[in-house]
Image (tube, rainbow, N blue to C red):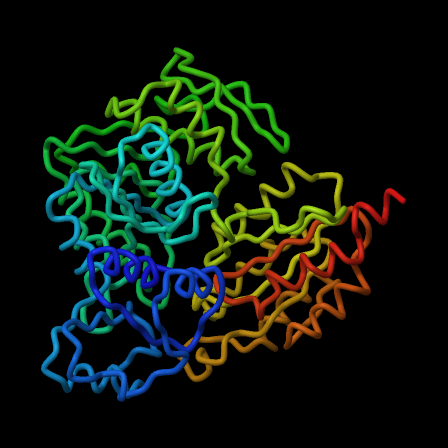
Length: 464
């Protein structure tokens, strides 16, 4: 997603852009095609030709190691300039006031909401978002306003640059959501994980602003060295900025409060307490910086529809609701299940789960499976990605299935899209809720499951 966003920015700057990968799936696939960006569905040294002026190689990934990838090998053997994604972003943002959104979860939604509110208030921000926001023309744009809103990642910049991506982004302001231990394959211990966050805090200038979640894990301990002004937010009253009088539903509303003072009542179509907290964080930043009015904030929050694959509703004509959630870590997946339980406590939940990220197939995190699926009435497990085979400490699909079955008896395993749909036909009942949870392709099920449910459980058929 990050690479496709950068491709859009470079094309906007006048570059001719093409690229290669071996995993293309929506929404990035359609977005690249829509914008006329040429791409190859396999790697080849032939793509490194004499006409190139710049080569951008993606983040730290086994598929991009020189020993395994002939195109990367040819790139480094050439005399062409080679840079990473965050290096280019830093160069694009060298004349703007850059606000980075960082944390172990909630980055994409928070970045998108902040950007949306500024766009709706005619501030013309530039932005870079690691997901596809609903209602945006693209998830990255260079505009004429002075603000550049960037999703920042703690993951290494590339296979040859171990510095975290957000170090390159020239941050003046920072929204810090959480620093919960993640990416165990890169950061074996929590201490390792927090080190880049501490350095990020030190990069903020004295005239910058740090808006930090008062209840985010490890946040309090890492912001102590900040030189700039700090404002805190959270879900409870112990935080300066917080929500009160929450009313849940398909539309959720709450009072935005600062200390004991009610600022304004906000309404959102986003699900879950984690999204209420994200809204509070964005509100705190915008109002503390006096970038927009409270009325503009209210309109921005109300009209924001969220991101694709971030708990977005995939069905419109079915009594069975299908939601897709991004589940690359325990906390991200838990926020999906907690939100669905909060809003649909009276419905049965069927979960289709793909352990796509390295964290979910890491033997050190097998304890995650003890309770992550406890709110699911049935689970369909998809295979571990093939490229994980042979990686140290990685569990197989069979090992994960065995662990899940210890705690969740009604668990199935499907190797293909066709097998998954066959199981769904047998176990799904009218008015169930289906959760698609992954950070990968889901074997194409993001499209086929909603299509199947709208065919079998059409609202029109049920009404007749």
